[in-house]
Amino acid sequence: MGCLAISTLANDEQAEHTCEPDEVVAGALRSRLRWGWQHDAEAADVMQEYGLDLPKDRELIRQLAVTRVAWGKPEWL
Image (cartoon, rainbow, N blue to C red; front, top):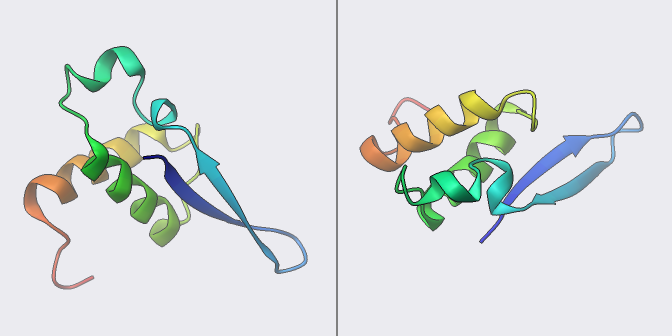
C-alpha cells in the first residue's frame, strides 16, 4: 500500500501524487523498523494534513507516522 500526498498547484487545483512505499522508508529498513501498511497509511494522512512533501520532510513524516501508529492520533487534532 502506498501513501498519497496532495500538492496544491498555482491555479488552486489539487493534484494527487501517489508515492511508493519505499519513498518514506527504504525497503531494507522496513523490516528492521517494523514499518507496515499502518505506517504507510498514517504517513499519507500526515503528509496531507500538514502539507508535507517528500523528500524534504521525510524524517518528520517518519516520526509522526510512528508516533501515530504507537499512540494514536491526539484527540485535540
